[in-house]
Image 1 (cartoon, rainbow, N blue to C red):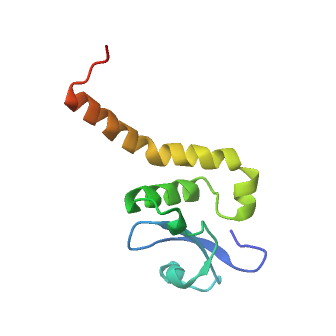
Image 2 (tube, rainbow, N blue to C red):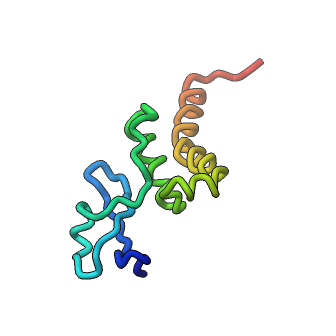
Length: 106
């Protein structure tokens, strides 16, 4: 699938495991994606989340196709869903702590 600007989309996964949408010229190899034109999602480092959570949220946004400001504006509720999905694993870990502590209300 080629973009109107003549570039084609590829997925690049960085060393930390973040998925990035990049655009490459048609003749470029997919292995050149690291140097492609960034197409989202933007870096989430400014949120100051733990790295593991930030990477999961980044990938949730990528997988849901929320790559640009336009995507985020049109699908704002999907951002909440991405946050919930990124934190779901953490909620299970919190529950395990409660379970392990043997705290029953009452």
